[in-house]
Length: 41
Image (tube, rainbow, N blue to C red; front, side):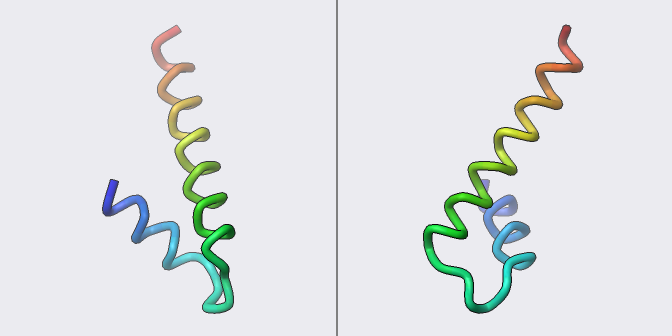
C-alpha cells in the first residue's frame, strides 16, 4: 500500500490537494481491483 501511495503521489502535480491525492488513490485501487476481478472470472 505504501508503494502505491508513493507511485500515485509522484504522478500528481505539486499543487495537488489532499482530496486530489485521496481521489487518485481511490481510482487506482478500483482499477487494480477490476483487473483482478476480470482475471478470476
